[in-house]
Length: 403
Image (cartoon, rainbow, N blue to C red):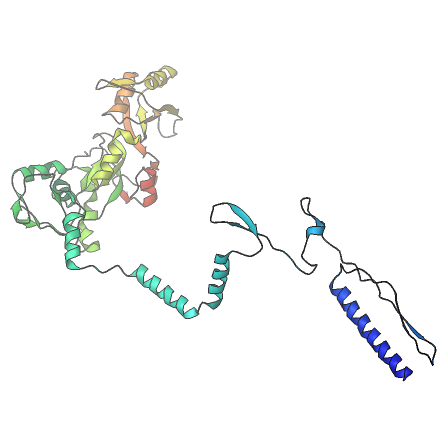
């Protein structure tokens, strides 16, 4: 009986030791128990003694507490990790909390539970709304056209762009009552019209609905040609582009032939670069002094050129009560096959016969004059006299025009 009692006490002591060991392992702050001694006394046998001791727990490193925290006030165990969340409360102030914001939890839950079918459907809906225009009723379209549509273009400008005549000649036709709009005679050049929707007749002929494309040509003007675009002029600069106009109908079927004219003018004896177009806004922009486009000329003069001549040209001269001063004057080196002196003169005013007057006031006589540059566009060196080339967007940009 004593042996069975001893075994029972030993088993109980072992279970107690294991329990205390597990508890001390899970909680590092539990202090180490002292050595325990169990004894069993009996009248018939000597007492049995059991020595029970517990090993100290393995210390775990603890993070250094901050300057404003107290280790004794930390209620969290070593296995817990606190993630602070800084959120803005209803009162507008920032506060610190241990739980993530509710809207973040809702977003995570929605992202986890969202179905792919709904996502595909939304993509199709977005694609359908972006590609197909909204459908409007006839009454809504009619109301928009009557109240908010583009007011159109001036009648005189539409006629000139269609190749009827120059702007001034088109205004004379309108004043003479030879133009009708939607069956009524129109005598006001400023009337706003749309050739695609309005029915316009000039001298009994229907104006095409489609306007010609914008044309921009750089031409190497020969000597003896004038820049006037009159029909009676036999040696007009525009006549050098007749082959371009003859092939227009073949290259652009159904589009009326454009009416070409020159941007600015060169006198009959001056050669070189000149722009030919049918775009009135483009011509006005390049010709207006506000564009500040420089023009470079090469002047071949008679006799020798000295420093005093260059100083006299650089001081400028008065033309039409306006004192014109060139941007730069330079004496170019002589060419082997040319015995005359050459001057490079750059101006920006664009007055009539400005370069010729500057050279004349300096006491020199011009033998020949050639324009080689307008703005940032130079006359191509391989462009023959009387030939032309179409300008691309880069050339138009060099001229200061955005098409």
